Length: 148
Image (cartoon, rainbow, N blue to C red; front, side, top):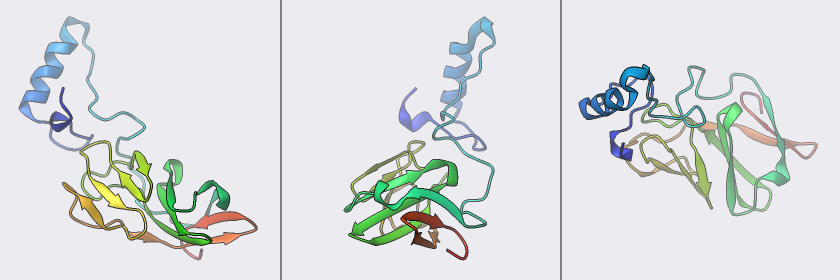
């Protein structure tokens, strides 16, 4: 199955994907998942609904970013001591972002890419920016979410 044939849960798979999946499943009755649990959709809210401790502020490299998959937050540190946080839920298909390279975050489901310092879309199919999440450093730990 090619990357373009993949669809995250909750989206209509393409006919070609269904036919390939049926052929692969055969008599064994196996299902085919287009998105792995690590990058697939999650039914919860796209941003934290209460303050959440992410971990040590030093875990986010200067000039880089880190995805906190469980909290669905991506945090960037463009300059020493300056932190920016955004939802890590792709605005295209609802998949949790899968990887960061420098200050760019990628969605493994359909290939969207976002600027981790602004939330802006760098590569489609997503067209809407990532929602910003308040973030602060408290006692050397990153705290994200409302009232952060």
